[in-house]
Image (tube, rainbow, N blue to C red; front, side):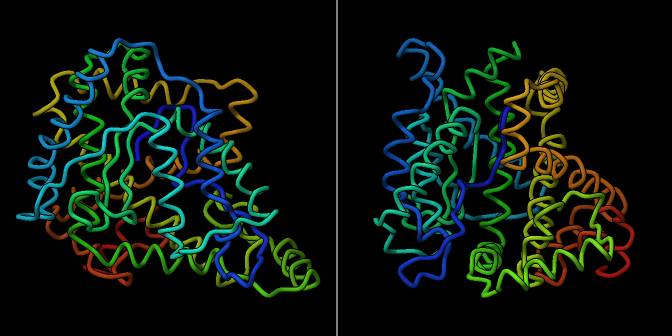
Length: 362
């Protein structure tokens, strides 16, 4: 997923409370209400003429197709598979897609319509509205494609891409292809390795399941963690480690590693492909990275903390460093062993020590 510097998250919030016997946390959210309210409170996009917006839609659709061949060539993945069309969305369309994706990811058919579901739906609407102005592109491996019916949809949010390319003052055609290179890499990752979707769903199921702990169990576990000084990866995990069961924390850590690998690989491919296909790639990368790290106002800093954006930015940096190091040492063909199974994925420690992953797996 590519976002501007204001926010980053892989999905809308989920509520902790269980009702109606559902095991999945997301079942207690009225997603229809969340989508409806989110569309109403979302900020309008940049002011553009109909001609400009139509042209942007057409150029993004074409860019997503053009990106496929060089991404496949560099990664060595998904060779020969069909190239599905991207969905070019406005902010309201992205909100609808996100509200559909979450139940699909959680395997939920009947969504909550009770009081708690509506309360949670209102909360989810606020975050969906906020994110709808930040997401540039996203690959959703859970929702079915409208044409093929197969799971997996590449989404590009046209007004947000236009807004950022204006703010950065970069060449629009180049920036649009650059964004597509990142998102198409995600599509290739999942289409070439279908087990990744099930792996994500299994870990999410553990994360959102009813823990069955008493308050005493939770307090005891937190106290033990504090006394033992448990720290993981320089505090990136933070409070999540204290508030989850050991099984949930393991699933959370596996999701963190997967996200770091996916994002780092996409950034590596983006930079590997860019110089040959995006004439102004150096200018775009410099401007985009500067925007990611610029000082934020207090409200923006709070939102970054709440949705975990700083951890996500670390994923791009640490993940790309891991992929750069492994590919530089053994080449892309050997690196692709990482996609074989959960056992060949790096551990959290190996992300920081690529040589250890090479020694264990290769």
